[in-house]
Image 1 (cartoon, rainbow, N blue to C red):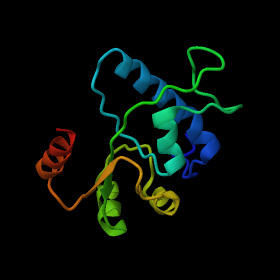
Image 2: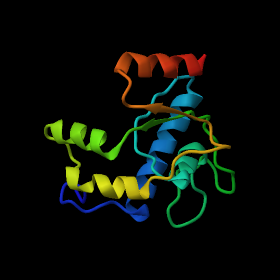
Image 3: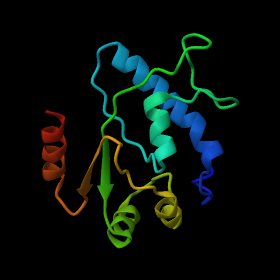
Image 4: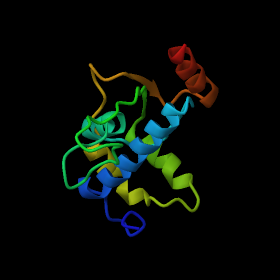
Length: 141
C-alpha cells in the first residue's frame, strides 16, 4: 500500500515480509522442492534473512523451536543488472503494477550489489529472456 502511494519501503516494512519468504523457502526446501523466488532483496542483510532467517527480536522469523539457530536455505542470487534508463522504460510499460515508476530511484539508491562471499551470478537485462534463462540453468547444473 505504501508503494502504491509512492512511499518507498524501509527496513521495518521489508523485514517481516522477508522473514515470511524465508519461512516459505525453508518449508518448501525441507519438503524436497526446488524453489524459484523472485523478489527485490536489495540489501545484503535482506538476502541474509532469506538464507538464515532473523533471530533477533522484535522481528523474528518463525522458528520450529526456541533457542534453535535459524535454518539456513541454500540460495543462488540471480542479480539482474541494467541501466536506470532501460529499467525505467520497462517499468513505464507495465500496466497495473503496484510500484509507481517514481520509486525506481529509491530502489537504485537502496541496492547493495551482491559480492563475494555471496552465492550469486550477475546477468545484464540487455540479454533476451532465453539467454537469461540459459545462463541461470547452466549455473544451476
